[in-house]
Length: 214
Length: 216
Image 1 (cartoon, rainbow over the protein chains, first blue to last red):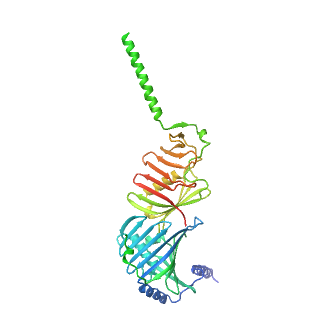
Image 2 (cartoon, each protein chain N blue to C red; image 1 turned 90 degrees about the vertical axis):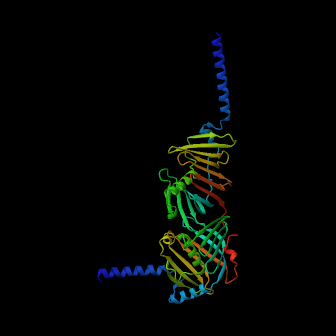
């Protein structure tokens, strides 16, 4: 065998190992990604409202302990979000159409997310985390996996601002409900934020007042 | 003779007045310089105790009118203090390590583009340098404050006088002043046995307020 061919074979072998290594543990690639995307898109379009509690875990490589925050969120179509931390801090993000309001322990600040790119991206990410609404988002490219219980979408940001902050986003869907069970925001230095949702209620009545600061 | 007598009377009045003025100023002086050896017996000044391992602070920053909030986490290792600030939603603003090295005490592991400017980097380094005082480093002077149980430690770094006001029993620092063009004041209150409950930093148009919170 010629040295070039041997080198190519060795390289192919290592690339194959690397690609295989990228498949998350316990998952296999989804063959029919078009069907999966259709399923997620249909579920997102059927979701008129959502309410759930969440636990947010911050994992930092420099420390053993995990920082935990707890809270709840509400969503109502088209673009109304209440993302509220209840412990260990009181901090609420309200998004109503393009208005972005933060209540930081009683101190209220208001922003227009259309004129602030960072807030617009946070708005998009929250909606994505809640609905799994990423299929037509040009800011991300995706790889899709599944196991017996879950679907997994691994999204890589394409936007320069997001690329500096995030390596990728992993969204885990419960196969039985198609609801988002967990979202993992992975940073370039391998630190990550994991948000686990529980007590999820879909298409229930939520008053508009929930998206306004009282 | 009359002239000599009046000069003597005048001199006598002058000395009396001088003594009165000196005694008044002497009484109102709040500080007495004392020998460092006398203070060996009392606690060394500190913000975090030797047994402090980690602490979480809710943090509000005002940087020239731009507000920033989040959580600041202090994590002590054998030779350093790692300080990480996160937004409430978990995104990292900075990750800085303060090590026991006089020449290069800071390792910046990460700094968000949002904060990567001279004003902020000076203020955060200055804040950490002041609160992470090395008690083993000899001070220039130690003084006894008028308030019972309080001491003052002073040191000069690059022409700036840094004053630490601290409790002689616990060593906990209640106030830090830095003189010079970048005049700074830090007020530390609500101490538990490991660390302060509140830290209020002010330097020109930059201020931080840190409030300790219990981890989940």
